[in-house]
Length: 107
Image (tube, rainbow, N blue to C red; front, top):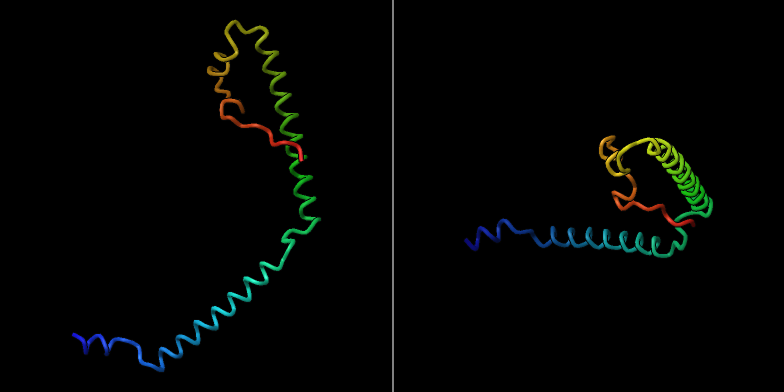
């Protein structure tokens, strides 16, 4: 059994080659890590501004649509004999509040 283990293991030159490859890999990963750590700004100011402006636009649109839907539903509920909750259940309307969703704070 011991001979079988020795025959299946790596030879000294193979191990030396393997160690050298691992050292090269380690050096390249260390260099890559240093480049990543030294980069102080991963996102350009233009990209950040674009994302922020898009978020503001989408939040504004969300508020506008929510206000329109609320006004429409309130108008319907004026002549509806049952409660608002019963109407929402019958029609199948799910609100932000049902799912604990809130608009993000303005940036």
